[in-house]
Every structure is written in C-alpha cells, then in structure tokens.
View 1 (tube, rainbow, N blue to C red):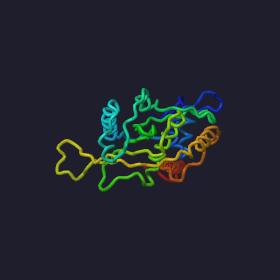
View 2 (view 1 turned 90 degrees about the vertical axis):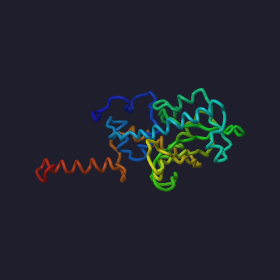
View 3 (view 1 turned 180 degrees about the vertical axis):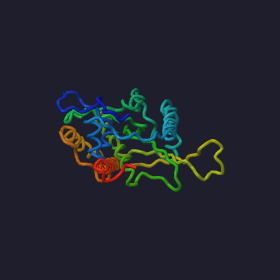
View 4 (view 1 turned 135 degrees about the vertical axis):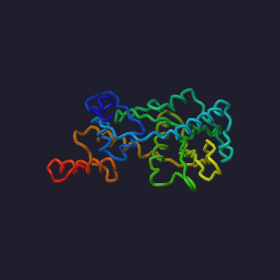
Length: 257
C-alpha cells in the first residue's frame, strides 16, 4: 500500500490532460504538501477506515429516490419540506454517480480534467433549474447541521458539483440540499435495526473560488520542490515528529522504544 506509486502522477512535460477528482482538490485545500507527495511523487496518505454504514445509507437513499425518478414524482421528503422538485432524470445519471467517473470537465486553462461523483440531482419542473443534492449520515445526540467549521469540506463538495454541472451546460441553482440521516440513540431497544431521523438542509453555494484554486494546483504540481505543509495537517506533523525522533535515535541521543 505504501510503496511508491508510478501511475496517475502529474508530469510537467506531458501534454495529456491530468485527471483530478473532487476529493483530491479537497486534499490540496487541506495541505498542499500532502497533495504534492501524492499526485506528483506517488506517496498517498494512509487510507481512512471505510464507513460501511454511511455507504449503506447512501445506497438505500439512492434506491428510494430512483423509484420517484422513474415516475417523475416527488419524494415524501420533498413534500414534507414543501420543495417543488422531483428527482432529475437523465441518461447519464448512473455514470455521474459512479466513483472514478462522475461528472467530468476539462479545464482548458490548466489542462486538468476535473471529476466528481454526485449523490443526486433534483429538478424544479417550473424553472428547469437543477439542484445538487448530497447525502450525509451520522449518529449523534442533538441536532445535525452543515454549518460547523469541520464541515467546510462538505460545502466545498457541493460547490464543486455545481461548478462541474454548469461547465457541462446545465442550468444549476445556487441552492443545493444536504439530506442528513442521523441514527437515533434514544430508542428503547436495538432489535437488530437502526432508526434514522432524516432532515433536508438547503445550502446557498458559490463556485467563484474554484478557477483560482485550479490555477494554484497547476502551479503547485509544476514546481520541482515540495510546498510548505499546512499548519493544521496532522499527517505532516506526525512525519516531522517521527523524523526528529528517528534522527535522534540514530545519533544515540534516545531510543525508539
């Protein structure tokens, strides 16, 4: 897993478009140094543990909304929140939701091929505008929301999808929606099942930051030296601390264990 990767690396001399996913752009925003190590030098960050329950909720929500997509009827959540919308029906919907494929757009100014896999799209039949929808799942006491500082990546994600769809010629509303499923902890018994409270949160997105960030990404990848680490990057802080301890251990100043 942690050997040097030789595929999917940026090469400054190459004329071919370089494919870059929405999640990799978020990695750049978190820490340019880790991003450079990954996309230029072939050293990825340790993989996080898979959130299988979240994936299951995502899968079930898609199945549920697809029933109404086929019928072009409003989902009960849309009715409950008085949203004059229906799930958007398009021949490429499955492709747009597939990881490593998704919605794609070649940013000619940087020659970066940007991709992002959406969870859902809703249509306003009256205005013909598309609303980007993202599913989230958690289990916590109290209310959920999408305004916390640590959720900035969620908001960036929404705006990236809006940007991608607009670049593909679609009329996309600034208003997106987060469908947030919160696993209940106050039930009398488990009985082999989880119960969820599902809420819909509107979010007003703005994609004006994206072109400038793509330019910075291209500049970062084109350089021959490592960029500085982000002050808040845990990966870089760990590497620096480990390197210092190992260096002292080799010189006999301390022991590893």
